[in-house]
Amino acid sequence: MRALQHVSIERDLTHMNRVILHVDLDAFYAGVEERENPDLKEGAVVVCMFSARGGDSGAVATQNYLARSLGVRSGMSIKQAKKLAPDAVFLPARRGFYKEASERVMKILRGHADIFEQVGIDEAFLDVTESTKCDFKKGAEIAMLIKKNVAESEGLACSVGVGPNKLIAKMASPLDKPDGLTVIRPGELESFLTSLDVTGLWGVGDKTKKALSGIGVETVGELSKIELPRLIEVFGKSKGAWLYNAARGVDNSVVSERGGREQIGRITTLAADTRDLEAITSKINELALEVHRQIDEREVLFRTVSFFAVTTDLKGQSKSKTLAAPANNVEAIQKTGRELINRFLAGNEQLVRRVGIRVSNFTQPTGQTTLHQFE
DNA sequence: GTATGCTTTCGGC
DNA sequence: TTACGGCCGAAAGCATAC
Image (tube, rainbow, N blue to C red; front, side, top):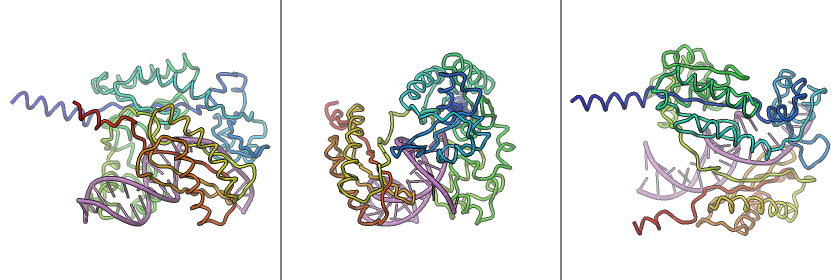
């Protein structure tokens, strides 16, 4: 009897009272550049991806907070950024260099986590439920320690959100940026969520906002008043249930270590717009070599190949094909790539500006079923 | 009808 | 309206399977 009670309490604790941290490096690329050259901190810094067209063709990857205050945003054209911040320093992005810094930071973060999950180059989730014994005060102390460690060893600022699950931690981390720390305890969920616009929920974008608007819902508080059956009726079982839970700050998704990227691709801007099959194919073949080098390194097989194109009007389109059997040779990428290029050209009349190729749907070369047969 | 898988688009940084 | 990278993962939308 006592044992049963103990089990059920323990299960409740793990389900309801997790302590999750979301760590996000502030203006990461710009932060690394500032650390390398502290004089940069005096002014606006814009880290750019220059295209193969030369001049200022390209887009902004990220900017420091001074540039941000002038209106510069990631994704905007470099030309536009130069109009907004003519005195800023414009630097070419050095991705490999940032990756090295990222790896050192992630190593620090991993050291503070019971369970660790890296997301992209500059974000991570840490489950610290065990080591804090579900104590949010201890969670906040770990967050402060992480911020101190990352600042001292890498000279970088980060913002941390602490919450009872991934959803809340992720939503909390940007609230106090830069160099922020925001803790949201289970008892504070309702007041935190109620007045938020529905798009404030991580996972709710424009599409879902419009659909919710259609049933008279604008804020998370309003969403929480809708009955579950109604949400399932409008959004289907899975998304309806997700919305129902999210509106209450409930999220059962777990922090779990990732095995590496799930897709590997390369994309580039052509020297001039074209619809020439041979020109596009030869560029894709080059990119395929690079993609193949990476999957070779990872020692994985792929089953899906995707071709991606941006046309003169700057609209993106993709074509993909899943192979009957996993492959690992560059010829499979190139051959399928050519097939997809043909399909794309057949269905589109625009000139092509950017092209890319990517592979996904990975499997391990030695199938586990084969191993299990001998166990 | 629901689950699953595949293709395409979207959106963040 | 003008005018733009290179990635990535997730969402959306559809087809097919059960």
